[in-house]
Image: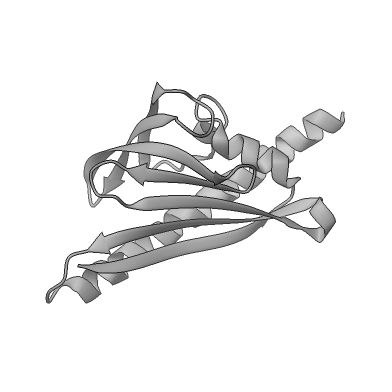
Length: 155
């Protein structure tokens, strides 16, 4: 087995706390930032932040793979993780202040184990290209939702 990390980063035009709150709210906010490759998001336990248990599907190569994950907040307000119950893969959402705290730099990353062998280079390439595209779209949706909520709170 080999560990592989895939990530994407984007500046989001909203305060870090607002951005983090959208990500951590699985009953409302997080649903709004999921690209179409995701097939539903069900909250099995909790709903906001640490202790939340979620179930979602993801379409990959024409098949939907369902995942259950446990949400943790190693650094509340800054870092939230989703740990896959079956594979142990960890997807992280890191929110850091930018431009004096008026905006946020957000990084979505996944650390996963790939089986060794002859296909590991192909698996690494596919995971990287697929997930980076998904994360870029998710970060774009997050920016849109955060801008909308920021404008609503100011007006």
